[in-house]
Length: 110
Length: 117
Image (cartoon, rainbow over all chains, first blue to last red):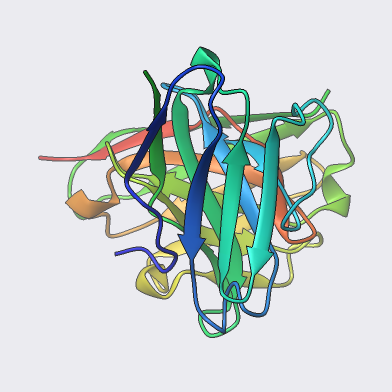
């Protein structure tokens, strides 16, 4: 069981906006920033969002992140077929003294 | 261009040992903390261990303490993970990653470790 909780699946049609939630605790998301990673099928994870809402160079502005209290969200607007992937949230956990991940959300573009 | 290339994975019997390597290029290796994350088949990401830039400070997931050892050789731009007393549940793809502040900004392609008799 993962320390951060994500829905196992999400879906949308091309052009739609979808959001993926990530719930943590006071020792993780409540105290530290949240990062999101995208894992395309058969590939290594890639940094998508860091420090709650920052996009690395090269990540389209269709992807956005937010955080409130002990929860965070990833939003993808203008959904495209190439967005089909697994998405993981992560944050440092002060109680565990290490980073923790969510269980991942598999996004399907219908 | 930042590159991280893992090696050393393979099939090992339960109770056996394996040493993974991660060779870095495209950045000043000795300036960064580094880490290992693993992913069991069909499962999510799990943090394994991290090491500071000069190799003095190490952190481990509680469940792995005592069996895994992380180390680095900054002269060779290489990160290591020594894995002992391997169990079936250690079967996973092991990724090395560069730590940048509170996040992991670059990941290797991963190396598969399979523990089976």
